[in-house]
Length: 435
Image (tube, rainbow, N blue to C red; front, side, top):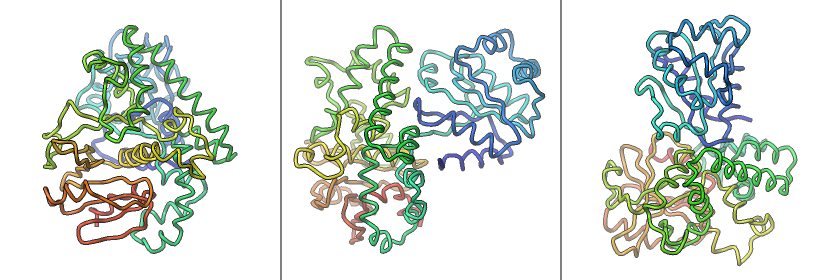
């Protein structure tokens, strides 16, 4: 299985001012796999250390953080000498030993010749609980579930994937039915690596649901095992409310839908825990589409999305025949599934800040506002080929953006002020401003 993030790891390896690298991402998105794959392909050897329930590592990092002493301990643990020019050090679940996280500062300052890659599924939670962090002494990359383009590669559709990264929309349109059929599969399967790997080999939709249910069960177990005891019921309630929140026409998150009379203050810790784990994406409203969008955030209004479209369809027990063949009863949820898919693709693009906009009366809404650092691009998401864009026109009349994007199942089309981008091409939206 190919992950595009591995190219970022190669670039990191070649940097002269390289710092220890931390890969952030939710549990089971492939962090351990990509670190080992990188170690195998880019180095003569790697030393893999998992800090979870590792008493030896707890003792090694407990007394002091002298790097020479730590390297000696790692060599004893690995059973061989560690050559810094030939070996990759992999620290997995590093948040379980806070001193190991702190040691990255001293590796960076006193032993930069060592190549160190780290990961931790609950790293964000650990940091918010006061774990000492080597600010400015590490680098980050984020890893998400497989994008649609990566899904195509896993399904053996390399040429289809390559075509999406071109501007040859005539050729893309010629093969649009292939893309539509594969996109429907992606809505069902999603991008969790274990699920995609199994589906690519067996094409069994029932097995897909079984694996997805197992992943969701593992997340629920994490709630009980790692979250503060008093917050667990609220984390579960908030997590399970997300599908119904996304089904609403106005997808602004409403605490009252979790439980009658619920207030934001009661669920602040639950929301923080889920976002820190990478299980949900919080997309905030902005009051004006000006650069930088973050300066115009309305922190009281936001939308929540899950980390993966396949897990969303599993949570609502969406059957494959309804998704793949179409059903009138499914129309209401189709918009939620499509918006989840689009957000998931946008999150995989680097240096993109994502928000949404509504006017003061909530009579017009732009599903996503994308800030690429140079321009603000409004995006309207349509599940099918309905090309009415009242909100986008309202937004254009008021703010006159240079580019407006509508993404739908319709073919690519560029008008004076509007670009219709097919849903299956949305992962290549950066081509619009990279030209």
